Length: 126
Image 1 (cartoon, rainbow, N blue to C red):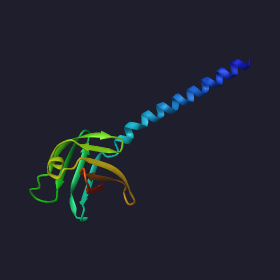
Image 2: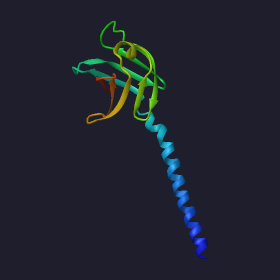
Image 3: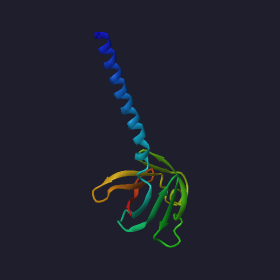
Image 4: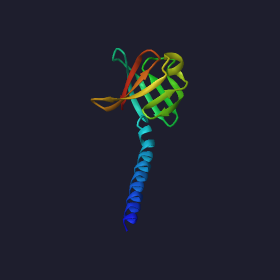
């Protein structure tokens, strides 16, 4: 009878572990989607730089400067805490490589747009 209780306990622990793994994996896609939407971007001088829109695997950027070549669309690769800018005006004109999700005291989260060397813009939810 003692062997049956141990076997039952081991099976219960395995079930709990399996449920924990499935729950964690089901939450992962939701974490990766928190960058989707419209973002108001400011440059290093805190001036309005434009609007960044991210949906699916594409982005659009509308600069506040008329004729700015960084305006337009491009593709992204999503990862858990941000995106990689693959192409488009932001990559070609401004050298922006990634958009990293960071905590923001006012808005909860923000996207920090970065080149290989520096932070270029900070974008907050619109």
